Each structure stands twice: as C-alpha cells, then as structure tokens.
Amino acid sequence: MRPVVGRSTIAVRKRPILTPANHGQRARRIIRVMQIDRFMFAQGLALAPMAGVTDRVFRKHCRVLGAAMTTGEMVSSKPDLRATRKSMKRLDFSGEPSPRVVQIAGGDATDLAEAARANADAGVDIIDINFGCPAKKVCRKAAGSALMADAEAAAQIFQAVVAASPVPVTLKMRTGVSADRINAPRIARYAQEAGITALAVHGRTRDQHYQGVAEYETIAAVKAAVSIPVWANGDIDSPAKALAVKQATGADGLMIGRAACRRPWLFGQIAAALADRAVPAPPDLATEREWLLGLIEQIHDFYGEDQGVRIARKHIAWLLERRPAHVATANALMQAEGSARQRRLVDGYFQAVDQHSP
Image (cartoon, rainbow, N blue to C red):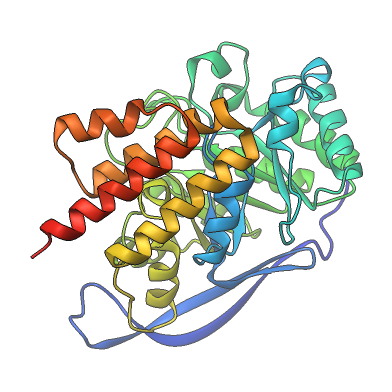
C-alpha cells in the first residue's frame, strides 16, 4: 500500500461571497482551491464523466466555458476492449490541456490495475475509478456502482490500482447501493487509506439511478470522514444551488453532469458566484448559435459523417429543451441526415427564433 504524501492538498482561504439566502448581504464563506499532485483546480469546478457525452470535443468546450477539470468517458478495463475504435475515441486527448483524466470501469482488480498503468504510460495525468455508474449493463458485470455492495472488495481494488498507477488515482462513487445500504463514508475511508487522492460523491444510491432528488447529508458525512479533497455531485443546476450545496456539504469542489449538457456556460456562472463576482447572463441568441454550430461541426470532424450526425443529435435535443420548437421543426432537426444539412437546419432554426423574438 502506497502512502499519500504530497499527492493532494486543500488550500483554504476566506473571502466574502454572496449566498442565495442573504438577499445581497455579505457573508463569510470558505473557498477551497483543490490540488491533486501538481494540478490546481480553481474553485474545484469539474465536469462529471458521462458516457456518450464527455468526448474530447465537449470537454474542450467546457474548459473554455469555465470547467477547471474534465474527465473523459469511462473506458473498459478489459484488455480485449482497450484497443477498440470506441475506446480509442474515448482515449483521444489530443490538443487538450492538462490534466488529462481517464475514468476506468470494471470489476476485476487486476484488470483495473493494468488499465491504470497502461493509460498512465500513454500520457494520462490522473486515473479515475468508476464506482458510480448505475446502468444495468454495467452493474450486471459487477462494475460501476455495483462495486459499492462489498466495501472490503472495494478496498482491494483501490490498493491494486494505486499500487500500479504512477499517476494520482481518484474515485467517483454514489452514496451506496440502496437507501438501507448507505456506506459511502466507509468506502471513502478505505479509499483514503489505500492512497486515493480525491473522490467525488453523487448524492444518490445505485437503486435511484437519476430518479428523485440528490441528498447531501451523506456527502457531508464523507467530507467529515476523510481529509482528501471531495467533490459534491448531483442536481447542481444553478449558481444558487451550487452555493447551497457547498454550504450543506463542506465539499472542496463541485462536479456538474447533466446540467452542463444542457447549459455548459453554467461553469462560468457558478465560478463567478463562488468568487463573489456578478453572475453573467446566459449567452444571447447569436452567441449560443455560434457556440452550438461550432460544437456540431467539431463533432462531425471528430467522428466522421454518419456517427457525427448521430452524436450531434444529443446536443440538438438539449437545444430544443432550452428553446422549444414546433413539433414538425423539432422532428426535422432530429431526423436530419448528412452533416451539412444538419448544420443548415440548426442555423435556420436560430434565424427563425431570432425573427420571432420580441
């Protein structure tokens, strides 16, 4: 077991910032700057790893928009799956600034250890272990959040991966398997003892998937149980909610997932709130158009014609959540074939919205 020496620290400074409850009055709050190895994370704002979303293109956009750290989509630790086209796309960090963070998924300690070593040798800066995914196809393989069912086995995985990895190892997990099996504080202690340098906690159990609302009492208990940095994750969808979660949990950082898919500029808004600056307004129509068309074009370039069009539809669907369209228009946008036609229809949609704006 490798000791944790100089791998993660929390720099703490006090500064006045506005809270959602004080209606303009100033309050004292502790702002933490997270450090993992040589990497400093301003206000600890991170993009959560999400399969099918946090590819190289989206990560780069979120970094520009204010995320201090981004993590790639989870990749399998199985040796026979590491070199597939899907895995290679998920491991493409070309042109990205450090830290380059890979999340590995699996249930076998040896496979996970070997995957950690292989990714570190390939130039990854931080390895993240997936103990959080609630998807049935992952949990059926005794991986993801299913691993939380056995704390002792989890400890063995932590020890194996940390021993094998020449770079820092972090952990993303849930509060437990079910409401009657909340064990995140215990697993967090095992993780710290094994040498895990930081961890993120989603405030739901495996059984909840993404239903109901996140709870933050368990995240606060995790924070109290360990001295390594902790990210709070789950339902953070506004600057006000970010401030409230920070206060409720004492977490060192915030990790944002689904809300960032729909409004990636949320990172900049939350960063401003945490720094006691005026929170910027959402982008105007012209700025959002330029951003989305640029994102879609880069997705087409990254994945190629057919796959790029399919993947871009997710981002178009999130556009339609922000700016609802007539059913026929929405169907045309979602069913467009060909990259050029897809971009042309999105551009036309923004023009139509602009013409009908008051």
